[in-house]
Amino acid sequence: MLPEQLQRIIGYFLEEAAEHIQIIEQGLQGLQNTVQAPQRIHQLIRASHSIKGGAAMLGFSSIQRIAHRLEDYLKLLRECPIAIDNRLQSLLTAVFDILAALVSKVSKGFGLNHEDANQLLCVAAPVFDELDAYLRVLIPTRLTVRATTDEHIHVFSGYCTSLAEFLSAIAERVGLLGGTITRHEQEGLGVRLYIDIYLPPYSRIENIRQAVELSGAIIGTVQTQRDFSLLAAADYPVYQRAIARPAICNGCRYYYGRSDGGNLLNCTIHPGGPEAEDCRDREPE
Image (cartoon, rainbow, N blue to C red; front, top):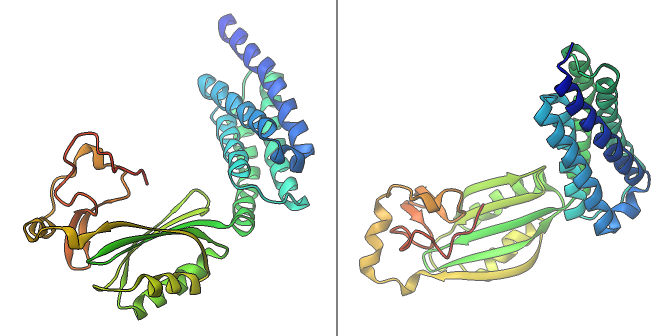
């Protein structure tokens, strides 16, 4: 039998979870209207987050995992507004139903055995797979392409609608320009893509942009971040050796510390390392 104090804590969790479950259920029933109302979608995200936190505190890891995934999906809908169709609503409702079923099992026995939890997690796995795949189809991939030459760094921002096709096409077109892709990273469900390109000296920005757009991207903004021609000749030797990564460089998009186009780059902004501990050019990945 559970200690009396723990029973009371679980009781508080169940009482709050019941309210949060009701909020989520009502929001999912009119999901299109919910997504279009910032306060409403935030309410669902907060409800999922609260269930996740309470479950983590009590060691209900299965509830924590399902609530966490539901929270992530709701955040995605808030950040990337899309038209809600029956399939998407049905899949999100299926995730919610599993979460509600797990909470219900706790309420019946003031606990959750591993067999029940694992059984429902097995039911959830294919739902997550289908939902992830469908969201990749529905949500355009936000895109950042950073093209580095010996003279400039051009940053193209926009989006592409087919991630796999874009990755295949950009590799081919960058090769035709005599360049190489030095990094590509996906974030989340593939809804954000970062690509770094190294190109020969004097590559024209018009040609680079055309290569990106013909690969299937729609470019919204272009920014030139750096003019390497302004660097004194004495500054160049730092490119030929890698320095120890400063703590501020951890997680910064500009940090390389590896071979890039024949040179060892530590940072495309501060090749010799940042001048101060708090680098004003730091940009998280």
